[in-house]
Amino acid sequence: MRRRLRLAVKRMDEMNTDYSEDMLVEQPTIELFSELEYETANCFYEKVGSSASTLGRETTAEVILIPKLRRALQKLNPDLPSDAINLAIETLSRDRSAMSLVQADREVYKLLKDGVKISFQNDEGEETDETVRVIDWNNPMIAWRRWRRILSLTSWAESRAAREW
Image 1 (cartoon, rainbow, N blue to C red):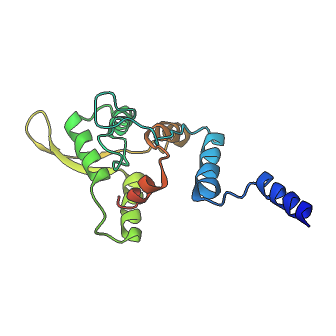
Image 2 (spheres, helix red, strand yellow):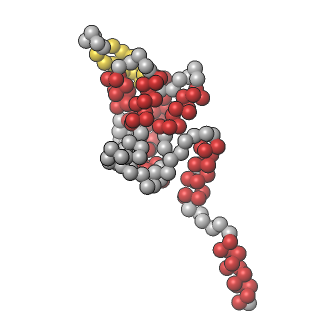
Image 3 (cartoon, rainbow, N blue to C red):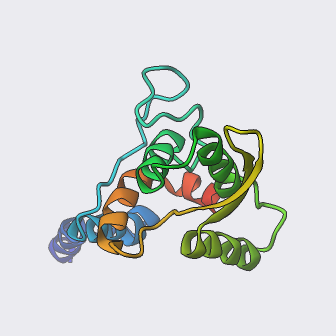
């Protein structure tokens, strides 16, 4: 009887019985994104809040990598001034926590699909309306490759904060 019990315990130890969110959700998702040639980042040990910040974030609560987003938007919209890019970043990253998740998702989806409509003063001081493109629909694969550098896979706690935008 004891021998059977020891064999059963040994078999259980040999089986992967880790039913954590990390093993069931996060690791398969990271693996899938890697297969799709997305760049992933383990941000558990990320340095934040200094010039030596790993991903350019002040805190781990920031789910948008602003420096990478800025570079991507500048590449997609080379003729727009930095003020226009900054306004688009403000619009994309604004707090949507007071909205329902469905409303927030729809709003962000529309911005990604149609671009960010902004108004700014041009060099002549005139009010100008422009649309800042977020995805290059003429070359969507190139755009997704650029976006993969902006998106980072973070811990579950940080991904919860993503629901707010």
